[in-house]
Each structure stands twice: as C-alpha cells, then as structure tokens.
Length: 475
Image 1: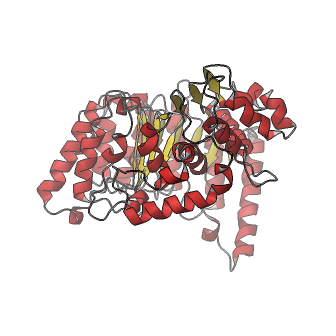
Image 2: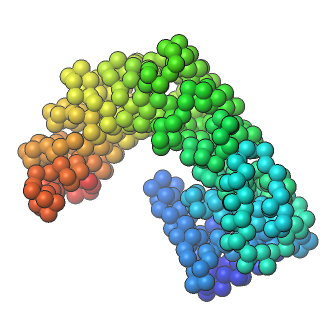
Image 3: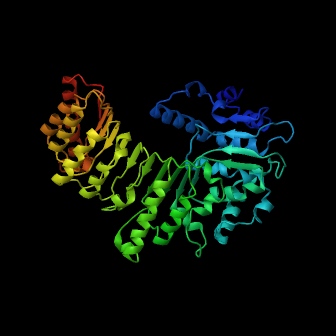
C-alpha cells in the first residue's frame, strides 16, 4: 500500500498508514518502491541504494514538503489505541545531515508551542541561541502545528537512525526525548566540533555532554571532526575520558582532532602523557576494526600511539599525518598489519629513498589488502613501478582491486605507459587513480591544459586496449 501510494503521489496515505500502523515494527525502506533492489551485499551497491532511497525521501514535492515530512507527521500523530507501533527503523535510509535534523525534531514537534518555549536544558546551550532556535522552529512549523495532536500520551517509540550532531536540532531532540514518547537509538554517531559554537562560553567542549544522553554501549561507530583544528589540550584530555566509555567501538574516526604539534601544548610532558593516554585507550578498544586519524600531525608519534595494538585492524587511514621513515618502520613492525583490507597513506612526503623502500615492504606484509592509497606522496614513477612488481610477485595471493598513486605533477607520457604496462598484469586490479589535478598539466590556460589531459587519457586507454584490460578503470 505504501509503495503504491508513493507511486501515485498520494503522500497523505503514508502519513495515515504510519499513524495507524498495525504492527509493532516498521522498516521505513519497505514502504518505498525500491525494496526489491535492497538485498545486495557489495558495499558500492549498498551505497548506491542508500543514495537512491535518499532521493525519494528528501525530494521536494509540489507542495514544498518531502516524504520525510509525511513520515514525521504520521509518527507525531500516532493513534494511541489503534496503532501498535513501538519500533521505527530507518536502517538503509540516508544518514544525511538534513535527514537527521528532520528525525530528531520529532520530540520538539510533538510538544505544544507553549511547552517548547519553556523547556529546561541540561546540555548548556547558550540561552539566547536556544531561544532564537525555538522561535524559528515555531515559525517554520506553525502550519503543521494545526494538524498535530500535541502531547498525546502513547507508549514510547524507539527510533532507530544514525545520529549526526552539528547544531541545535539533534542536541535539543536528544535532550528532551525523555519528556516525549520518542527514544532515539543509534549505533553510528557523527559529531562536528562546529557545534561548540552553540554552547555557553564557560562550558568546555566535551563529547560526554552528548554521550550522557544515550546508551554509550550501543555506539559502535564514532566519527569526530574538527575542521578548524581548534581542539585544545584540555579538550583532548576530556576526549580520552569520554572515549573510554565506548567499550564496543568498532570504527573510530578522529579527523583533524588529534594534532600533536609540540608548540600547541604547555609542556612536553603534557604532550607525552596525552599520547600515552590515547595509546592506553586504543589498546582497550578490543573490538576496534577501523581507525581514521587523517589530517592530523602525528610525525614521530606513531610508535607511542600504536604500541601494543593487537586488534585485527581492517582499515587504517593516516592521510596527511606528516609521517616520516621512523613512523613507517614501526607500522611495518606491527603484526596485525596482515589483516588490513584498506590502507591510506596519501599526502605524506615519502620522497626520500628510505621512505620509498619502506613503502614497497608493505605489499608482502599486507596480504589481505584490497585498497591502497599513496597519492601525492612525492613517489617517483620508478618506485611506483617497483610497487607493481611487488604485487605481480604476489599474483597468486594479492587481492588488490583499487590503487591510488596520483602525483603532484603529471608523470611523463612514457612513464604513464610504463606503469600501465605493469599494472595491467595485475588481474585483480579494477580501478587505478593516477591522473593529477588539471591545473598541474602544461599549458597557457585551462583549455590548453584540458587538451593535454585528454590526449594523455586517450593514450592510456590505448595502452590498456593493447593489454586487453578495458575492464581496468583509470581516473
């Protein structure tokens, strides 16, 4: 019924269907006319399917609303006696910022406008910003308020949806959920440090403010990002304490967060103690399988941070971490390197002969590797060629399917031909990223540079054709 209603553009039927849902459990994606496609197991196919679902859920309709709006209205108007709904699962749906905002507005939307203006806060959102947010919320939803059964008492509903925190929407929703029937349940949590801007000036940025609003044992994926690299040494200390509560973490991303520039710390002892604390934390996360520390300054600190790690890491991202030869040497000494499926060392300067030779040693040690990124590492074409030789040696065991070795400036044409001749022999390889940015090509203007790039691409395609490797995608 739901699929037919969407196909016929009768979206109000979706609202009524959810409001009177006769079952305890509802999977949102099963209401959509794509459900027959949603059983692929390959990661790329799953991503494509999620994108397709997102287009349906977030597409603007003729009346200016979205399908998500009708779903939300159905939930806030759930019939207290005829509906048996207790669990709403947004699994396989989009986890975009806009989608997250809409879902986490449920508690505030359920309240009357008068109650919204008097909500008490424990999360220390600055009063003026909270008042401004509530006033804006009331103005935007004044039309919807007329058709909402505010403060209708019904049994709690568990909302399963990944959580992204970047502004007031998600924080307020988490904070006041206990005052409403809605209970948010999520395994994946994204926090952007920009949300510090809505906190009171006298409050230290601490993710425990967020973790205290949920069951920390449920969180398996945590993604923290600090675009402006503003995290202080005191906040990093608080971060270690907060992360120690997430015992079931499988994926940890601290992008632009853990910056170990010595001049950012009061004393060298504070920096060393912080590194030791993070190492102790990482060793305690026994379920950790994916670690992303990209875009942080970790030069010469890899040994301290990773010492004693025995978890079978499947993914390691150290892009743009200013790594040096001593860091590579320690990585190579780690026994759990053999479990890696994906390794990203891009944007580190490995131009020295010592670093280049160390890079080559990763291939026989990472026997499960399917994705390797070493782009913009100042590696010469001859070294990349030797890298191909290492994969060819392991041809009966290698699983490599994706390789990135983009250079800062283009290689010579004969070097591209030389490299493709080698990588074309690796039968498992399906995609290679080798072309640099357009502005690096020779030419007096962008039009001339584009002509050079197109000619190079044409020649590379010819090389692959002679090798009968048209299946190898080059970008």
